[in-house]
Image (cartoon, rainbow, N blue to C red; front, side, top):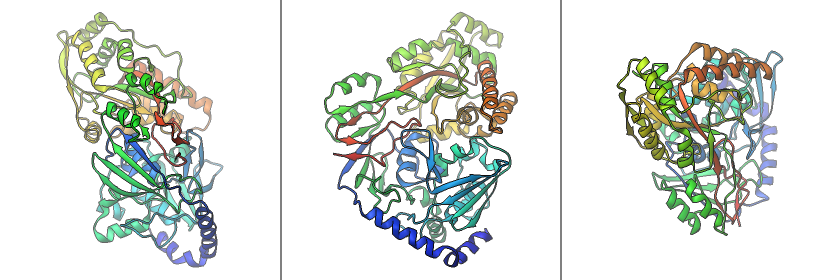
Length: 544
């Protein structure tokens, strides 16, 4: 913490001339291409839980905050999982793989809003604030506004990163406890969005630290203006954005529309120009509309039933095997996905490297499932709750229907499943807390690395985060860590394939399907890309 203060004192003497020069260059380039006076309306499926990316794990939240308001040190190219420079122009890795040095971009401005007017440009202080807030429970801002950071802890970054320090105002060094092969990919993820230290200090001084989650400030392409819960979010194009020409609309409006049929009608009537998650039944009518484009691609996702392995009954592996065997997955894919999905076997999609093509799936067999239940001590079955999410997701277009089909399947083996649902934010929060017996959930890959599936969804460090099975199994976890701690891809693949075999034996969740992703847009929209990692981005997107 002392070093931050020294940086502020040294800034004028160390980097003022360079920063001013870079700022003038950036500003002059950006101002050479004014933002077109265009408005784009996006019909989204749900309300974000908040606007602080470090606290959340869903695409609904990330579309509304991460890729509108913020940037990260390194970022994914639009429409890709390839990492490119972001707020860091370049980075170096030490020979032992334990030190990453990021060289920061000069001339980047934080957004000016009605609630914050920056007096300086982005620098190392902002990086230190962003990461020390997640690393240090005693950091003043975190003490003023206690929050959990599920991605950061799910991936074990709170234990991996031993130190974040500023070498100078535009150079930051991260020191790791051990080699971590996916570190750069992980640094491009949403939780690593850079916050303004100056804004945080203003909030802290005013006693309003929690406003960081309601009134966001970043360096990104759009400036937050207002949010009416369950109705609209309004953004303005950022005239000072450091990527010249990337902002092509002056107004971006999220029209929050949970009903998929209503989203389709709004798109057809041009009330919105982009919509999320069409139902499979709507694909053909959308394709037939001459004013709408409906591109698609195989989804980097998986929908599944997570069993809370800390709960009575489903803590027994034979019970989990019986429940899995009793689900008619073929019927679910036909009825729920309607031809826009494929059966899932492993805890990751087949397009992920290290996927085990030899993994064997249990056959649908009601009689054998009943026998397994009897062996586990439940010859007459039992009663449990099955949670169904209230919103459409890329990996599950109709959770209610899926839950009803599973409920009917389980009834055949004597298991009475009571279907439960909550508002989406509450659903995730209660799932993290482990209140469910079983829940429908899923995942869209975040960074293209297998660790993001095996570690984030099933690792011991993720038990209170995205590991909704609350499953901590040492033989599996040791293999995940082994894969994480080497940069040799062949060795990583071997460890991950062994881990998948353990998963198939223990079944902490039942894989159901990988869905095809569709992105309906008005033909007036230009530059829209399907993001393989599950969110939507509007930088680079225009309206004719």
